Image 1 (tube, helix red, strand yellow):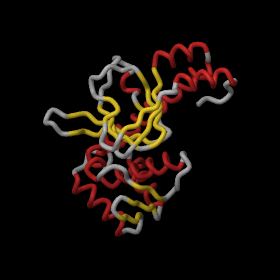
Image 2 (tube, helix red, strand yellow):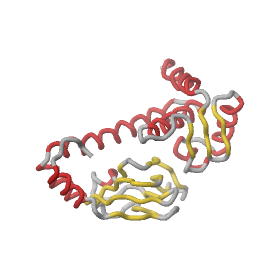
Image 3 (cartoon, rainbow, N blue to C red):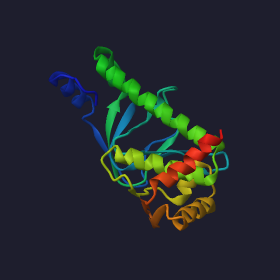
Length: 221
């Protein structure tokens, strides 16, 4: 939420986002092609967004966690362009977009804030495209782990430990890598003492080593 709003404005925002929705693990928050009406603030839980490819596979387009906004894909054409699936039991605040727009026209602080959230999302998407454009497998996975842990840390979680809510296969789909490549790369990181992996628990032992893997790549370009 933007800072500097008065009591009455905060009260009105509360009314706008009063509706909450619970989504069970594996449940869908919205589907590709569905009419866009609301943005969703994730209160608890973890989501993936994905689109079905022509050969029927699921292409993962992003992972979203508590404290992030989901549904921005629907703004452009008034319908959603992907499915949003809960990777664990989750709860979201429903934010009807027309109400937010109407309110943010009155309150410039809110308008700025909405724009900031959108541009952060665009920057993140752009970062992913750069990541996939030119990186080798270990550079992709290193950048992915660093990004995840940094987003979790911004929400008050550990800087070095995370539980992967997504499968190796979903990570591969997102990063444009085969499942076995993801597994092999994780094993390589473990052998090198960079990370410790116990099923879905990942502990980053050497953040600098991961950064070097990513930065060496950037230095080459």
